[in-house]
Length: 475
Image (cartoon, rainbow, N blue to C red; front, side):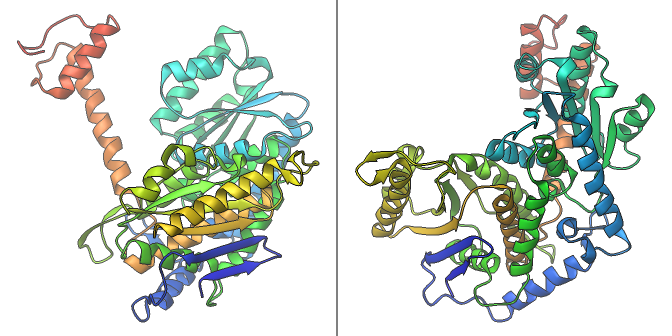
């Protein structure tokens, strides 16, 4: 089947334009993917590099969690609500400090929903760029801003740097930092120990069995939702409802349908990129969120047998109809190296719609541009998927997050790779540490071998007035 519709779930998936007529997966592959997913949810070790389980599905259905973890998950829910209850009326804003999965999910939720009623306004620091940090700090009033620092390991350097910048800004204003700070981190991490020693406002858990890119249904995403006054329980309910549907071995399973479509479009090797075009401003950041979920999970050099396969699925996009003016020309007439995922919402807004022409609203035009672009691409033989949701609210966001988490897991099994480790990310962190050691040697006057890294480091140090010496004739 190439279509799925579930009105109680509020989701439709249409893969009829993906060129899948007559396509069949290799025999037994889909069943094996379901088996792997069942084992994952039952608590199998899914990240052998670190000996870890992967339990983001338990976060919205604690009864499925093994080893008594369900109680800890429910206790986290209580802690989230307590933190929000204590913040309302005390603060006007919150500043979330994190990076990667510790920021992308909360940013998606904040941009899609925003504060409601007495909820706090969200701000984010998601990098170690001092100029970006300064720009964000200029927008807040420290005395009225709660700081949420998110780092599972507690040692993520970008997050630590930004936290130190925030603390320094609070000190300059004479504002006590600790009573205005919450840590979301692993138990016993360096951040956890710091927060405990200094008496931070609260400490919420991040478990080693929840990866950053699948942490949005943990406190990482729930706390921002609660602070904004949004219905975080509806978000969990949507994710749990989607899990219940996508767990079933049925012909129209929507997550399996996505995984099959990705496989067919890319010949099982990601040969076509996924271009995401949500025709809804509230889903502007969904493509950024999916970039990490999909590309960090599926971009792998080795398969499960240790063979070099260089798998991946490139994700890019923004929103319609704005960005159909930017790159649909190439999508229609350029290289056939992509498939589009359109996302439409049936309800434009909760208030009355203005007719800009007799019987036609702005929302009618929006859907018209989606359908027109889809038709134009189909006429050119280009592939597309269409997702339809009823409206964009907390529950729908939970549905979409769970749908893609399951699709990524199933697709990873279809192509025989591990979706739950990220050796390439760790390699980048180690290389960055080496570069900083090289800079320290330069500043200490130790001899180094001139190369491109040395040239760029010395150029920056000169620009900042921190360079005191030369290193060889070429630097």
